[in-house]
Structures are given as structure tokens and as C-alpha cells.
Image (cartoon, rainbow, N blue to C red):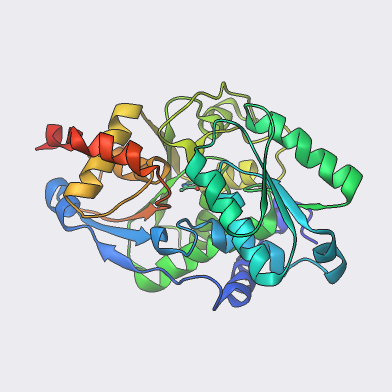
Length: 332
Ligand SMILES: *Cc1c(COP(=O)(O)O)cnc(C)c1O
């Protein structure tokens, strides 16, 4: 058992890599030619969009499920999710023959609810925030003995996401910086732990949306703080970090170099840029790192930068409306 954030080690990330091998895609790094040209640096995309569920969360969910005992698996698993973690837990549960109930807030787009159901899990909508959905998870754990797999504040989930960091160290050991979409901090904690355990020179930056940036505000306050949840294009990044956060807040505080905000219009421009200039489809929560570069929040000139493109599960009607306006042309 890993009881505290201090107990989580690089060796846990290596162990996760062995457990998830063959169940999760080892994603490629591809050069972002247009972004590199525009910003005068070497910019590479880590394409987590290529995971079977369309987002990196499959790594953490698969590792967490692999670590359960037989007795725990028999009870089934549950979680709150803005969509991608629920989808990943559903997919991994189906692959391992485990029952799953995913609890959601009504802010989650319909495409993500359907994605969960397609993988054989129950999607249960409970209230209009992550916090109210959490009450139903608490009840399932208390009354029905199910096991909660938290989307970010779980050491095995964090270790699973950290396998991205190991792959970056192998494929691009001389990178100057890694830019990571940031919400509850599971993704960036794992990546930063992997990277900082190996090298002191590679910087790790987090980026999140300006509307309701829970981890960003918590880092500045020095403790977990609540934010008001509002609808955002980066729906995968909305929600709090939990007042009783045990792992991801301290790990992020300790290992991440800096965090940055981007507004909704910048996320639209980044989605449009990815589509027209790089020929990639990403979701809003995944485009924030690209937005931070295009907006100059994180400098890239003369550096080698790895950008995590964390997922592709966007409502296609929403995406086609955005790209029809070609908002990225303001960078021309
Ligand atoms: C969950 C998610 C994130 C953020 O991950 P955290 O571990 O919550 O910080 C970023 N991008 C996408 C696409 C996600 O689904």
C-alpha cells in the first residue's frame, strides 16, 4: 500500500509500465512542423489521442485495476469522471471482467456518456457538479462495497500516467521542457515524478483553463481550494482537486516548475490551429498546452518542447462550428 505521496517512487512507475504493457498503446512523439516553424523551436507532440479510449487516462485506470485484489475486483469499481477517466475505467473493467458504475455531473457532454456505456459500464448522472456526483460514489462504496478509483488522487493512477514520462525520457532525453494539460494533477504528477527522478534539467509546465482552475489556485494558495465550476471548452479539465487531496496536490507542488492559464478564445484558436495546421483532432482540454505556446505563456524559441496532446474526445458538432470560423488565422 502506498499511504502518502512521499512513498510514490519512480520504481512504481516502472512497475506500472510492466502491468499495462500490451493493454495500453505506447504513443509516438511526432514533430509539430507548423508550430515549430512559427515559434522558432523544436516542438513535438506526444499523441495520447491514439489511445483506444481517445485519451491517456487508460494508462492510470489500467494500472489501478491491475493492482486490485481478486476480492476487490469481485465487488466492482466506481468513480466520478468528467468523461475520459470513466471511459477508461469502463474499457479496462470490461477487458478484465470487472463491473463498473461511472458517476457523472450533468455538465458532461453526451458523447462522453455514450462512450462509457459503449464499453459496458453503467453511466449514472447525479447532480450538476463533480462534488454531487461524488456523493453517489461515496454511497456505492459505503452501501454496496464497490471500490473507488479516483481519476487523479490515487497513487496507482498517478503511476500509470507517469509511464508517459518514461516514454518521453526514452524518446527525447534532451528535451528542455514538457507542457502538460492540468486538472486534478494526476497526469502532471506522474509525468513530473518520472522526469524529475531522472533529470533536473527538463522543466515541467502545467496549463489549465482560466475559468475554474482548481489546481492553479490551490498551488498559489498553498492548500487545496474550491473553485466555481463553469462550463468550458476544456470540459476534461473542470472540477476541483478535493479538499482531502492526499497525493496529486503535494506531488504537483513539489515536482512541477510552473503553471499557466489560457482563456476560452485561446483554446478555440488552438483547436483550430491543430486542425488546419497540424491536421490533428484534439479536445479542448488537450489543446490548452498548444494554446499556452501560441499565446506565448510558455516560451519555446530555441528550445526543444514536448507537448502532451492528452485526448481527442470532443463533440464533433462543437469542433466543426469552431473550425468553420478559422479562429487560428489571427496567428497568421
Ligand atoms: C483528465 C484529463 C486531463 C487532466 O488530467 P489530470 O490528471 O486531472 O490533471 C487532461 N486532458 C484530458 C484529455 C483529460 O481527460
